[in-house]
Length: 258
Image (cartoon, rainbow, N blue to C red; front, side, top):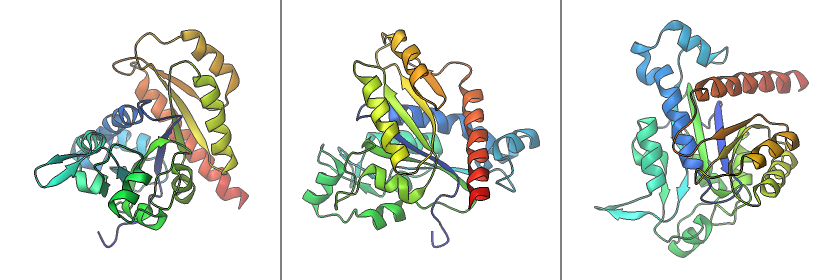
């Protein structure tokens, strides 16, 4: 792990709130991308590698998942284990301890849980927990909403996202009030100079108001995808591919403006 580094490519997945389906969306992203990566390189065609990797990788990247801190973990044998961590690890094919370094038992915010248990989860430690092997594409998932406290020193999800400087994917639960929550969160993301690459509206119950989705499309700039209750539509891989292309164009623009 000594040569591991902070992610240079990937996504920071955040939400408008807790329990909006960040991990649900994250696992679908990981499962969609893994067949095109170094984990399954022997099965990948050169065309697939090129389509995913673009110009930023010399070979198919390793897909990694990181959720640096998670609370509400349960005791499994001698270890604490978060359900979100288990799902992400299964989707990325990694050990759970690599996905989440800090797994805390109290079912409260990670910041309070760390303070109560005495764990050091300040921003430098959270960044260390996000490191991955070179040539990786890393999905980093926060905890709670974008402005929720994350570290023991009250580091916010927003602070971690800013330090990583990855494109942000915003997950929104389709429920009453989500338009306001979405607009406020997008404003907070812009205020920190971060790039929101897309918004996923997650239909939590299968009975979400479709008119709300239509209204949101007229109010926001980032591409919007509606995640049906249960699983994504068949166009999910194409939507992810378009986000990857947008991210590459954005990074090129940022380098040109430096």
